[in-house]
Amino acid sequence: MTALRLRGVRVGYGRRTVVRDVSVDVPDGGWLAVIGPNGAGKSTLLKAVVGVVRAEGEILVHGIAAGSLTPRARAREVGYAPQSPALPDGLTVTDYVLLGRTPHLGPLARESALDMFVVEEVLARLDLDGLAGRPLRTLSGGERQRAVLARVLAQRTRLLLLDEPTTGLDIGHAQALLERLDRLRREDGITVVTTLHDLTFAAQYADRLLLLDGGAVVAAGTPAEVLTPERLAHHYDAATEILTTAGGHPVVAPRRGA
Image 1 (cartoon, rainbow, N blue to C red):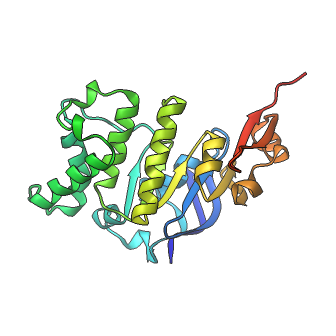
Image 2: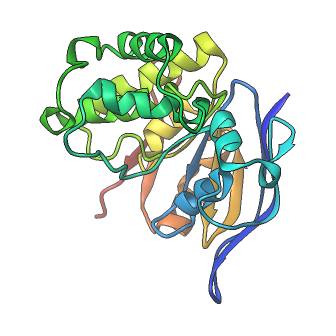
Protein backbone atom coordinates (compact mmCIF):
# COMPACT_ATOMS: atom_id res chain seq x y z
CA MET A 1 0.00 0.00 0.00
CA THR A 2 1.09 3.57 -0.64
CA ALA A 3 1.50 5.59 2.56
CA LEU A 4 1.86 8.94 0.78
CA ARG A 5 0.99 9.92 -2.78
CA LEU A 6 1.58 13.37 -4.24
CA ARG A 7 0.39 14.36 -7.67
CA GLY A 8 1.08 17.79 -9.16
CA VAL A 9 1.50 19.44 -5.76
CA ARG A 10 2.03 23.18 -5.95
CA VAL A 11 2.51 25.75 -3.18
CA GLY A 12 2.78 29.48 -3.68
CA TYR A 13 3.17 32.51 -1.42
CA GLY A 14 1.50 35.39 -3.18
CA ARG A 15 2.91 35.52 -6.70
CA ARG A 16 5.94 33.40 -5.80
CA THR A 17 5.74 29.65 -6.46
CA VAL A 18 7.78 27.72 -3.91
CA VAL A 19 6.81 24.15 -4.81
CA ARG A 20 5.79 23.29 -8.37
CA ASP A 21 4.26 20.12 -9.81
CA VAL A 22 5.75 17.62 -7.32
CA SER A 23 4.65 14.01 -7.76
CA VAL A 24 5.97 11.06 -5.75
CA ASP A 25 4.79 7.82 -4.11
CA VAL A 26 6.12 6.59 -0.77
CA PRO A 27 5.28 2.94 0.04
CA ASP A 28 4.31 1.72 3.49
CA GLY A 29 7.42 1.23 5.61
CA GLY A 30 9.62 3.20 3.22
CA TRP A 31 11.99 6.07 3.89
CA LEU A 32 12.05 8.99 1.47
CA ALA A 33 14.66 11.72 1.94
CA VAL A 34 13.87 15.05 0.29
CA ILE A 35 17.12 16.79 -0.59
CA GLY A 36 18.13 19.92 -2.45
CA PRO A 37 20.00 23.21 -2.07
CA ASN A 38 18.87 25.94 0.30
CA GLY A 39 15.54 27.43 -0.77
CA ALA A 40 14.61 24.42 -2.92
CA GLY A 41 11.19 24.05 -1.27
CA LYS A 42 11.92 21.00 0.91
CA SER A 43 10.39 22.29 4.15
CA THR A 44 7.43 23.81 2.30
CA LEU A 45 6.65 20.44 0.71
CA LEU A 46 6.42 18.79 4.14
CA LYS A 47 4.25 21.64 5.41
CA ALA A 48 1.89 21.10 2.49
CA VAL A 49 1.46 17.43 3.39
CA VAL A 50 0.70 18.18 7.03
CA GLY A 51 -1.60 21.08 6.15
CA VAL A 52 0.44 23.95 7.58
CA VAL A 53 0.35 25.68 4.19
CA ARG A 54 -2.31 25.56 1.47
CA ALA A 55 -1.45 23.47 -1.56
CA GLU A 56 -2.90 22.67 -4.94
CA GLY A 57 -2.79 19.19 -6.45
CA GLU A 58 -3.47 15.78 -4.93
CA ILE A 59 -2.17 14.69 -1.52
CA LEU A 60 -3.27 11.23 -0.39
CA VAL A 61 -2.34 9.83 3.02
CA HIS A 62 -2.98 6.09 3.20
CA GLY A 63 -5.40 6.50 0.31
CA ILE A 64 -7.34 9.35 1.94
CA ALA A 65 -7.39 12.85 0.50
CA ALA A 66 -5.52 14.93 3.07
CA GLY A 67 -7.75 17.94 2.39
CA SER A 68 -10.81 15.99 3.50
CA LEU A 69 -9.37 15.39 6.98
CA THR A 70 -9.93 17.69 9.95
CA PRO A 71 -6.72 18.93 11.61
CA ARG A 72 -7.27 16.44 14.45
CA ALA A 73 -7.86 13.54 12.04
CA ARG A 74 -4.81 14.50 9.99
CA ALA A 75 -2.71 14.56 13.17
CA ARG A 76 -3.78 10.98 13.80
CA GLU A 77 -2.48 10.00 10.39
CA VAL A 78 0.67 12.13 10.11
CA GLY A 79 3.28 12.96 12.75
CA TYR A 80 5.26 16.11 11.99
CA ALA A 81 8.32 17.73 13.52
CA PRO A 82 9.36 21.10 12.03
CA GLN A 83 12.98 22.09 11.62
CA SER A 84 12.94 24.38 14.66
CA PRO A 85 10.12 23.16 16.93
CA ALA A 86 8.95 25.34 19.79
CA LEU A 87 10.01 23.87 23.12
CA PRO A 88 7.74 25.50 25.71
CA ASP A 89 9.56 26.78 28.78
CA GLY A 90 8.63 25.14 32.05
CA LEU A 91 7.67 21.73 30.65
CA THR A 92 9.35 18.50 31.61
CA VAL A 93 10.22 15.88 29.03
CA THR A 94 7.13 13.86 30.00
CA ASP A 95 4.88 16.94 29.75
CA TYR A 96 6.24 17.72 26.31
CA VAL A 97 5.91 14.20 24.95
CA LEU A 98 2.33 14.07 26.27
CA LEU A 99 1.50 16.85 23.81
CA GLY A 100 1.78 14.17 21.15
CA ARG A 101 -1.34 12.52 22.56
CA THR A 102 -3.49 15.64 21.98
CA PRO A 103 -5.05 14.40 18.71
CA HIS A 104 -6.42 11.38 20.58
CA LEU A 105 -8.10 13.36 23.38
CA GLY A 106 -11.63 14.74 23.43
CA PRO A 107 -12.20 18.51 23.74
CA LEU A 108 -12.34 18.40 27.56
CA ALA A 109 -10.61 15.07 28.18
CA ARG A 110 -7.55 14.57 30.32
CA GLU A 111 -4.73 12.13 29.64
CA SER A 112 -5.74 8.54 30.37
CA ALA A 113 -3.75 5.60 31.65
CA LEU A 114 -3.33 4.54 28.01
CA ASP A 115 -1.84 7.92 27.11
CA MET A 116 0.65 7.67 29.96
CA PHE A 117 1.54 4.11 28.92
CA VAL A 118 2.23 5.25 25.36
CA VAL A 119 4.45 8.11 26.59
CA GLU A 120 6.39 5.87 28.99
CA GLU A 121 6.91 3.29 26.24
CA VAL A 122 8.19 5.91 23.80
CA LEU A 123 10.53 7.42 26.39
CA ALA A 124 11.97 3.99 27.13
CA ARG A 125 12.48 3.14 23.45
CA LEU A 126 14.38 6.39 22.91
CA ASP A 127 16.42 6.02 26.13
CA LEU A 128 14.74 9.09 27.62
CA ASP A 129 13.07 7.42 30.60
CA GLY A 130 15.90 8.56 32.84
CA LEU A 131 15.23 12.16 31.77
CA ALA A 132 11.43 12.03 32.08
CA GLY A 133 11.25 14.58 34.91
CA ARG A 134 13.91 16.91 33.55
CA PRO A 135 12.92 20.39 32.29
CA LEU A 136 13.33 20.71 28.53
CA ARG A 137 15.63 23.69 28.93
CA THR A 138 18.23 21.53 30.71
CA LEU A 139 18.62 19.03 27.88
CA SER A 140 21.55 18.83 25.51
CA GLY A 141 21.04 19.23 21.77
CA GLY A 142 20.90 15.50 21.16
CA GLU A 143 18.50 14.97 24.05
CA ARG A 144 16.20 17.73 22.77
CA GLN A 145 16.08 16.15 19.32
CA ARG A 146 15.18 12.81 20.86
CA ALA A 147 12.44 14.50 22.89
CA VAL A 148 11.03 16.02 19.70
CA LEU A 149 11.05 12.59 18.05
CA ALA A 150 9.38 11.12 21.13
CA ARG A 151 6.55 13.68 20.94
CA VAL A 152 5.91 12.77 17.32
CA LEU A 153 6.05 9.03 18.03
CA ALA A 154 3.55 9.48 20.86
CA GLN A 155 0.98 10.46 18.24
CA ARG A 156 1.05 6.80 17.15
CA THR A 157 0.82 7.67 13.46
CA ARG A 158 1.96 5.44 10.62
CA LEU A 159 3.60 8.30 8.70
CA LEU A 160 6.32 10.56 10.10
CA LEU A 161 7.43 13.83 8.50
CA LEU A 162 10.68 15.10 10.01
CA ASP A 163 12.18 18.36 8.78
CA GLU A 164 15.97 18.29 9.24
CA PRO A 165 15.90 16.08 12.37
CA THR A 166 19.70 16.21 12.72
CA THR A 167 19.99 20.02 12.71
CA GLY A 168 22.57 21.21 15.24
CA LEU A 169 23.80 17.71 16.09
CA ASP A 170 27.38 16.48 15.82
CA ILE A 171 28.04 13.42 13.69
CA GLY A 172 27.74 10.97 16.57
CA HIS A 173 24.42 12.29 17.89
CA ALA A 174 23.04 12.62 14.34
CA GLN A 175 23.99 9.05 13.54
CA ALA A 176 22.49 7.77 16.80
CA LEU A 177 19.20 9.56 16.09
CA LEU A 178 18.94 8.19 12.56
CA GLU A 179 19.80 4.67 13.76
CA ARG A 180 16.99 4.86 16.32
CA LEU A 181 14.60 6.13 13.70
CA ASP A 182 15.53 3.35 11.29
CA ARG A 183 15.11 0.72 14.00
CA LEU A 184 11.65 2.05 14.86
CA ARG A 185 10.73 2.07 11.18
CA ARG A 186 11.72 -1.58 10.79
CA GLU A 187 10.12 -2.73 14.04
CA ASP A 188 6.83 -0.86 13.68
CA GLY A 189 6.46 -0.54 9.91
CA ILE A 190 6.39 3.26 10.14
CA THR A 191 6.85 5.27 6.93
CA VAL A 192 9.40 8.07 7.17
CA VAL A 193 9.80 11.22 5.08
CA THR A 194 12.67 13.49 6.06
CA THR A 195 14.43 16.51 4.69
CA LEU A 196 18.19 16.23 5.14
CA HIS A 197 21.06 18.53 4.27
CA ASP A 198 23.67 15.83 4.87
CA LEU A 199 23.70 13.91 1.60
CA THR A 200 25.72 11.02 2.99
CA PHE A 201 23.21 10.44 5.78
CA ALA A 202 20.38 10.74 3.25
CA ALA A 203 22.04 8.18 0.98
CA GLN A 204 22.79 5.70 3.74
CA TYR A 205 19.44 5.70 5.55
CA ALA A 206 16.77 6.48 2.96
CA ASP A 207 15.47 3.97 0.42
CA ARG A 208 14.79 6.68 -2.13
CA LEU A 209 15.74 10.31 -2.66
CA LEU A 210 13.73 13.18 -4.10
CA LEU A 211 15.95 16.01 -5.31
CA LEU A 212 14.28 19.42 -5.52
CA ASP A 213 15.66 22.57 -7.04
CA GLY A 214 13.66 25.73 -7.56
CA GLY A 215 10.65 23.96 -6.08
CA ALA A 216 10.57 21.29 -8.81
CA VAL A 217 11.64 17.64 -8.89
CA VAL A 218 14.89 17.34 -10.84
CA ALA A 219 15.71 13.72 -9.89
CA ALA A 220 14.08 10.84 -8.03
CA GLY A 221 15.16 7.28 -7.37
CA THR A 222 17.63 5.29 -5.33
CA PRO A 223 20.60 7.13 -3.79
CA ALA A 224 22.91 5.63 -6.44
CA GLU A 225 20.63 6.90 -9.20
CA VAL A 226 20.20 10.42 -7.82
CA LEU A 227 23.61 11.25 -6.39
CA THR A 228 26.10 11.80 -9.19
CA PRO A 229 28.98 14.28 -9.28
CA GLU A 230 27.52 15.92 -12.38
CA ARG A 231 24.08 16.40 -10.80
CA LEU A 232 25.52 17.77 -7.55
CA ALA A 233 27.72 20.17 -9.52
CA HIS A 234 24.70 21.44 -11.44
CA HIS A 235 22.23 21.80 -8.56
CA TYR A 236 24.52 22.46 -5.57
CA ASP A 237 27.43 24.12 -7.41
CA ALA A 238 29.65 21.63 -5.57
CA ALA A 239 32.66 19.60 -6.66
CA THR A 240 32.21 16.11 -5.20
CA GLU A 241 33.16 12.47 -5.50
CA ILE A 242 30.80 9.61 -4.68
CA LEU A 243 32.73 7.01 -2.70
CA THR A 244 31.61 3.66 -1.33
CA THR A 245 32.20 2.30 2.17
CA ALA A 246 33.35 -1.27 2.86
CA GLY A 247 29.70 -2.07 3.57
CA GLY A 248 28.62 -0.81 0.15
CA HIS A 249 27.08 2.47 1.36
CA PRO A 250 27.59 5.69 -0.63
CA VAL A 251 29.52 8.65 0.73
CA VAL A 252 29.36 12.13 -0.78
CA ALA A 253 32.83 13.62 -0.41
CA PRO A 254 33.68 17.24 -1.23
CA ARG A 255 36.56 17.45 -3.73
CA ARG A 256 39.03 20.20 -3.07
CA GLY A 257 39.99 22.35 -6.02
CA ALA A 258 43.51 22.55 -7.36
